[in-house]
Length: 138
Ligand code: CMP
Image (cartoon, rainbow, N blue to C red; front, top):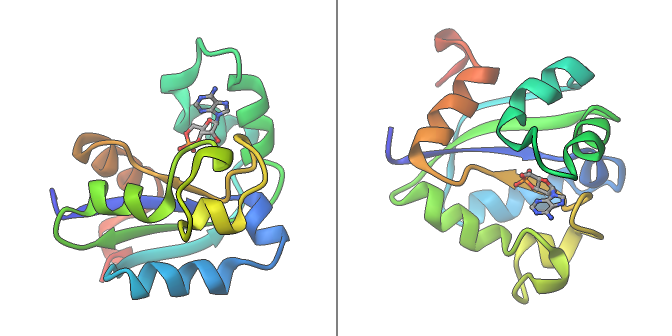
């Protein structure tokens, strides 16, 4: 699955009305939607999803924020998906995100940074499997 990545449109971007614009950017960026759902993470599920950051100072805030409202989760397909998607979304801190990137356009802060994108092929598989069963992929 090296041609796939996983994304979430985070609670800030959903609340600010950016689902449509972000999906448009993703599709225009050449990504195909393999799976998608509109859902809300419990605190427990958000903590599990971000367990890799458990020891980081921002973990508590991250879990609170990511469970604070609905998100859109999706598996995306494209050649070189992980790297190309990270280019499309821009730097984690929107203040450092390049012009025209999703985070530069729609994000407000490093926590409320509009979208998540997997950082490796290995994590893309783990994260996609966290949200989607085999019969939810097309
Ligand atoms: P995301 O790609 O979803 O992965 C972890 C998230 O933690 C990250 O986006 C940011 O929204 C958030 N975060 C908050 N502070 C930091 C930080 N100092 N470094 C990295 N990520 C951070």
